[in-house]
Image (tube, rainbow, N blue to C red):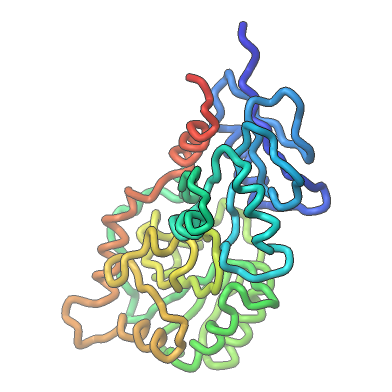
Length: 316
């Protein structure tokens, strides 16, 4: 009986914990065929058939049969994301796994071509396909913002605060999900908006949370994903987003969402126009119809993990 095919997930440090990495690896373990074994370690495990590095910038050199994932926005300028720490490792990798085509194009500019684009997916166990397009209740728009809040403002915290001055509190409300988002909920309430907030809800509630919003807001300055994007679009929820991460690959402006400019005045006007009662066809309704019809095309996690296994060249 042949030895199992070993897929080693290399984390490179024990000092940093990542719920995202843990979730991805757990999904891979569940998807792996019986003749493949997924292991997780800080240092590369001797004898593995393929090594998947998630923090290649912490390595001095990669093993020959290696895959690296680009989890972040390569345009982001922070000391710990210095490109000089990443590009040499990307060049050593057999395969560079990108989440979006913006990352792919960026790496191509640096001569890195051995790229596969595999985005995040939607978990159909918790988020089934929608039965019908969404419709607004009583002409009100409930916007969801699903992300942790960062003090450095990378998730668009400043844009959110500025948008509040250009939205109608009588017709717009918010659902905020993520650590520290209570701060934004307080800002919204202070300006007269209804705002509900959950910092750490269990994932089993994701269907109820996504199902309670009319559109997802993504206001980030930089993104690798985000994971909330396929969750929303896969549920038929329009996405109103700045052009970051996977957004240009999935959101078609005016069809299943809006591409925002980052200018609060312009973006606020476009969002409020979704409630324009003079538009007989309903601008929001067109977005909701587009998101509904596109939902089946959003990859599920089963498909994403199948593509991961192909990336590893796991034998049949």
